[in-house]
Image (cartoon, rainbow, N blue to C red; front, side):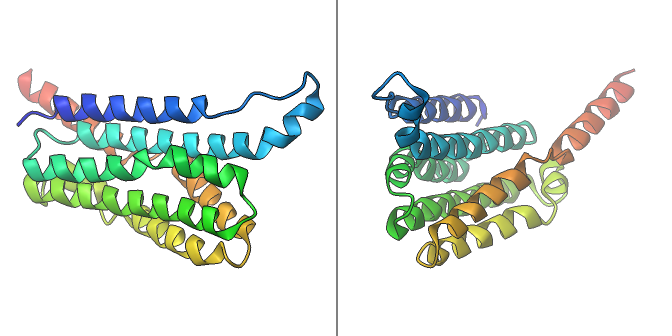
Length: 201
């Protein structure tokens, strides 16, 4: 089956998730800069979550460009990913209000661990359908960064009970690592386009 509906639905869900997050931001109670202080933790939590969601959207976009069609299994794997991402607004709001308490931070990290595992399952479902010699397989490679990120999220969960700032620092570093442009998909897809044009000419 075609991938168009999967892409459109995923984009729509992510747009709704981000909208819910921004609507949960509270306005300052006063008109001075000092009035921003109480809502700063919640705003910073929103920025971190927005950044991670943007990274997922970007990676999902590149992933879908490397595939030709999807199966029922891929659709369910994609829904699994969206399930975890749909939990981001409520856990962000909770963690922002209680960023010094271990359970909100641990569950915040657990949601991103779930999303990382779900994304891995999605790539495996796509690889099973497209084969090990596909553009997708060559672009993903061993996916060391994805696996290491999942391990880091897993470590952030118990570390929240040691120091919540260590746990949040790990999540922030993971986001920074993924901000570094990943050219694997762009290079391979561009190369495939050049080869196709060369063959056509």
